[in-house]
Image 1 (cartoon, rainbow, N blue to C red):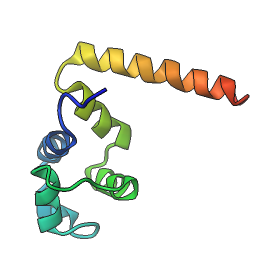
Image 2 (spheres, rainbow, N blue to C red; image 1 turned 180 degrees about the horizontal axis):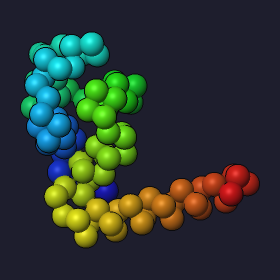
Image 3 (tube, rainbow, N blue to C red; image 1 turned 60 degrees about the vertical axis):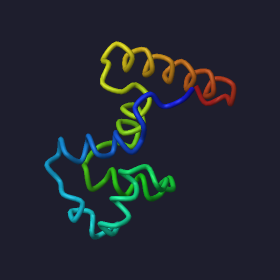
Length: 97
């Protein structure tokens, strides 16, 4: 499943929605790195993604959902339902449900 709305666009969208500048991430990242992420020149590690989301005060799944579903609420609902089903299946198979 390819991201319909890239991670770089999702990151920039959430950053703008939160009213944050690239400099607001200085405790976890340089402005140059943020710019590279938003121009899709670099990809963050999972740990870096979590740090960036902490600054933006959003759960990393929110960022990833936006990256995959874009700005289509119906697509978002379908994607979240699929994730929920897959998570339940994995937990059931591992005996944790």
